Image (cartoon, rainbow, N blue to C red; front, side, top):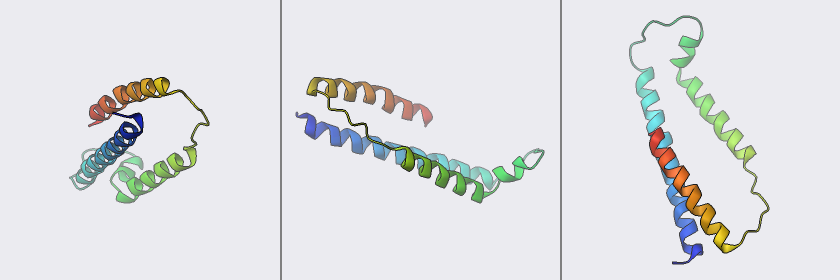
Length: 100
């Protein structure tokens, strides 16, 4: 199997897992803000019950991710790419499942 075939598959699987994880987290938050509030003090309690707070947080997060995404101008050999892909997958996928 060639590296040019495996890299896009791993990239798409990683992206799909990230979107699924984000969706599950936001679904849990949505359910949480519609439950009866417990004991809260201060102004932050009302912020955590507001859907607009989470909407703005997600927009800010994606904005920072978009602005911070700069591809590194590195040319690496094929064996190094294989090692980096394996190491990155070994760290990324269990980490995302840990988040879930």
